[in-house]
Image (tube, rainbow, N blue to C red; front, side, top):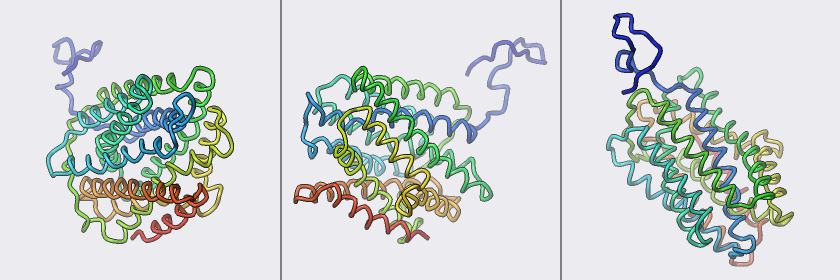
Length: 345
């Protein structure tokens, strides 16, 4: 309970408390603001996690450094299975826990030796994904209807595109002048501030019960999400590795990461970008339209499929690299996997 100072109770009690008003849900704009802050912080720092690990004086081999994402995606899949057991989950405490863990992940990179930072950071990232994204996606869907759902869910994709341009540029600027560790520390502070915002915006105790049910999403849609996850996993290795072919300087890398995000956001490089950036939003919209009564279940199932396929695809990409393949081989794999997204129904 909290007291709103300066508002007089018409019955003469002096002040109006929160219990005297009907609780109000977080609206779409508030949720997108939370999303924007979070993705900005993660793009600003996470884009450079792998870059930091392979740069001097850390100088970890690329095949070792990329394990940060293998750990992250693998832990995320396992965490979905733990969360999605049909038990009620309160949205605000769950999101708060996820954000707290993510802030610790950035702190780990800022303060720990490289290998420990990689392990702890990857672990925190994997725990954060379901704890934050399952309730956030469910809350955003609750603020949509059939008439506006496609546009509002596309707002998630647009937010990623915008923050994917701005975050890496700012991160690169800071890293060039003050080092990567400051970037990670600032990102931790932004995530912590977002945690405060999430708790401050909580006005009603929203509860979801998650479960995994592949029958609800269907075989073809599951394959489409497999394609989406495969692209994410392979791109987590291909994007930085491809960028290293051009430069290893932090600012220039930030600009390259921003360029890749911008290209995906506006579909400037044809069908590949259109499919990888736009299709996931519409696949999720189609799924929600036909499963409005089961949004937590289909959201959890989707999250499981995405993270399993991210992990498997990334491991497959590492096998290709270990077998003598190069970054162009990874992009060929992405071109094949992405075709699965066309199977959505």
